[in-house]
Length: 489
Image 1 (cartoon, rainbow, N blue to C red):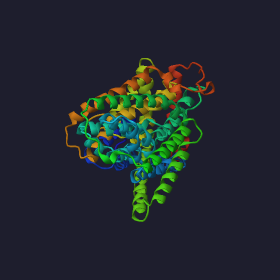
Image 2: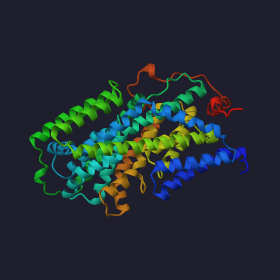
Image 3: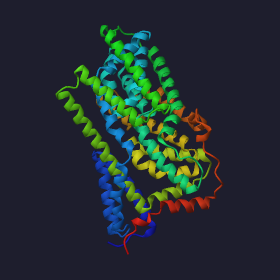
Image 4: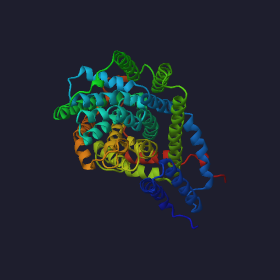
């Protein structure tokens, strides 16, 4: 095969990304298989076309070893296990009934309780899919018994299931925090700034105020929408038993201590996940809900789901290595650093790219594939990594609710066997989407909202001025393959 023209080599990476999008849309295969298949095909073509020396591909094992040495990955199986245990134990039902007991009776109370349940259990579920399954089982039948229309039931479950994305210590927050640390390290090294590199705890703290604002707005919207629905006769089984009230009080206290401890930095997210999984697992053993077949089913599903997440991570790492070897990351970095306008305009462009990616990729795939490519050059131009991280987080949350391919919407339609029209669901979803966009716009215009409570020692210090030419030169050096990846002479 004739050698590929050097100037066209970086564009091959964009072709690979397009193939990933088309493969996920049209083949129906799991994303991990599509990613590893496209990366393998791209590697074979690149070697045959002399675009990438074969010896450079030996960097992959080292990358994967470094990847699995990351302590944060311990949280993945723990969050998966917590989500399965929450679905197995009667905790959600006890919380829901207890919440209804202290709210005025009517459909509004049902909607508010569902939203509050999503906020409490979402961060512990670990994924939007687990939240959808749990809320659909506990909330949807009761909403139906109170006469809540099917489109509103679906919209409410979808929105409530995404609250765990922005409320620490969610799995999305953990993975995004790790990706932002890598991206900010590249940007700080490239520009020579004296900023302190962002970490996962910074992302947690930055997300607290926006997450709280969105939760308040969502509860208000749920209450106002519920007030307009006709009242239905209250079912007798909705009154909580004394045991359920006690369980709900203990659960709320434990969850608040756990989430609050992570938020103020008393312990790390991995530690919170371990404590949560241990307590839920012990509770399942004591109550007899995790014996014999039930335990085998939970542990088997936890291993299968964890394996799928790790497979996705390996596949995405392989693809991003190919993009680096082809120089696609440098091409995109040049585009981002050359964008005209101020930091707000540049951030909007990058967020738009992430939003478009959400139509074909879920949050995990975006964090593993897109964030490492577009965020480092963005942080070269925009030094506030904490602000950028929260904006990316809010954009990812919005992506779950964007019709027609939003992951939460698709999960809800399948789980609830939704029979209504997509247009009706979108109409029910619009008030919540507007609330989410209000939060996103507020954070865009008020970056200081992500720095509430931050100590002066953690704030970015002033950096010496660096010209655009110098930034481009340093960025090129950072994105050049490392010397030990060069083929032997």
